[in-house]
Amino acid sequence: MKTRIHELRKARKISQEELAAAVGVTRQTITSLECEKYTASLVLAYKIAKYFGMTIEEVFDFSEIDEQE
Amino acid sequence: MEKFKKQLIFRTVFLFIFVVLIAAAYIVIYVNIEEKPVSAAYSSGFCTGLLAGAAVYAARYIPALKDEEKLKKLYVAENDERERFIREKTASGSFSLFAFILGAGIIISTLVSPETARVLGIVLGGMVLVKMIFNFYYRRKY
Image (cartoon, rainbow over all chains, first blue to last red; front, side, top):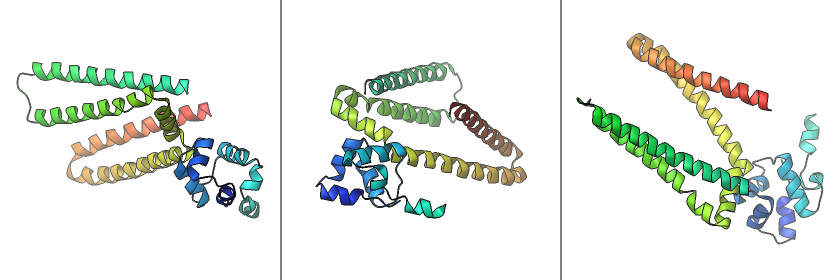
């Protein structure tokens, strides 16, 4: 799934390590999310969106799922 | 984090008790066997390795119990959702592959050694039974 995590992180000058620590996952999980290799759970998506002060839809791109339907 | 700490203490104590009990039972049985089978040396080595592994596994929790930062790191490492996902995928994939290999082994060994086929059949049956029990448990739980 496409996400804006990398873009948002760079804009705020936050490292993967810092984001990972803030949302309670490993740095590798953030890397996988940014590389679109792994799709976050609802809870993690919520935590990340909350961390950036945005809604889940603003951080995660659900257009592919909408197209499948 | 306190709940996780309690879990770690339980795991450490449980593993140490397990190691001590198995080691004691093995020593008692080993000493009391008059004519030791040829496989006794292999068995001793395997048992020692297994118990040492369990002891090392239990000991790795001790630093985390003493240091809050290490405890937090261990908590994240154990509860990271991607890690859990990988563990679940690995477990289910390994089971399927192993069951398939055992099934093939049973078919082939039936022709060569019926006794081996019977043992493999029991192992496969046990594995499937355990999987069914867990499946039933989790279907009721979730």
